[in-house]
Length: 303
Figure (cartoon, rainbow, N blue to C red):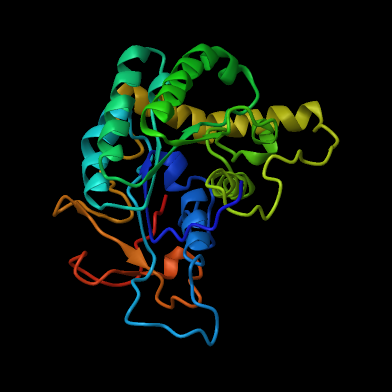
């Protein structure tokens, strides 16, 4: 059933999937489904041209606290408390996949920590949104499928416990298509993120703009030589660095904080459209006065 709920605030919690990798922008920063969703939500409840405005209605507020490479312990310890304290109307939580994709993983413990995250965020009072993450077709998905399905069973249980919305991307055939994934084979590309934003939008009961799970048009499979060249490039540019980080205990998120999180103060802050009548991309939004030590354009997440 479609609704027209004017959400006035949205905070996103998680890892690289929510940070926006690899929906790259021309300046080298990332956008992603959460930014796309925020920009669309900011258009809800806006007064039409010529409508009277009484008082000074608050603008739409958004904060993305997600950081690439974060494990569920880090999401629980670093992001959930600040996110819950913001009292957002809408909160999204996606985490645990980085844990279950590691060679050694205590899935029961990951599920317990995901439960901790959901419990903390639910106390913030907003609508909680959880996801069954998408999986790219191939041997990696099949190897880790039992772990993923155990994690997603916990997601379903948490949804019942907290009356949360679940966005089932795992069941999507379109999002399993390799053409919606970036060259690193770990993150969605721009079209993949656009479809996720539409999926969340529709799961919230908002009017559909497109069929987010529509299959891509048929295409001629690449030749064997092209596939092997792509495999070699993938191994050199993505797989070997990833293995190196695992062996040395490093993460792509080391030293990084969420786009709207001040690491020095340990607090999160809101951003809002500079022009409420024309929200535009969140990269042009400004920090809400009084919530950030340096008000100005939204921080950008760069590689």
